[in-house]
Length: 145
Image 1 (cartoon, rainbow, N blue to C red):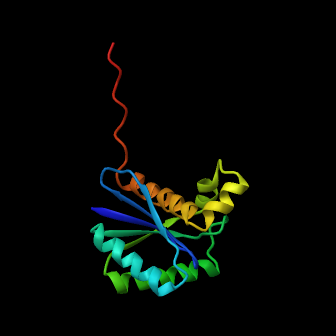
Image 2: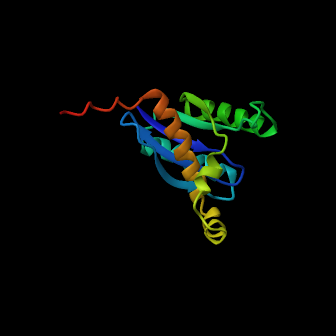
């Protein structure tokens, strides 16, 4: 199994890759201004990495409800299913962008936000959450006396 984590945005799409080893790795984000080119870039990554499943961050509100952005993501998920013919798993993405930005200064954030680095870090957090649910780590080995 080969998974592509996706942090959807109207200007950038963050990406991460993982497999049954259970480790999510950020990939370069899709940052083209043209939405059709971003979709084509996504299809190229899926093909090149032989992705079997898509893991898409789903924007729940802090109270667990959904809003306008969730409708956009629902439409994007439907488009992914139609275009790529792959299963799409929706994963709660609350606070992933905030966690992806942790430890960065405001100057660093301004410089890297346009490159999609934060978006791909968020995609890696989304994918890692999914992988941890699907492939839980083994229990720690007992210490020998």
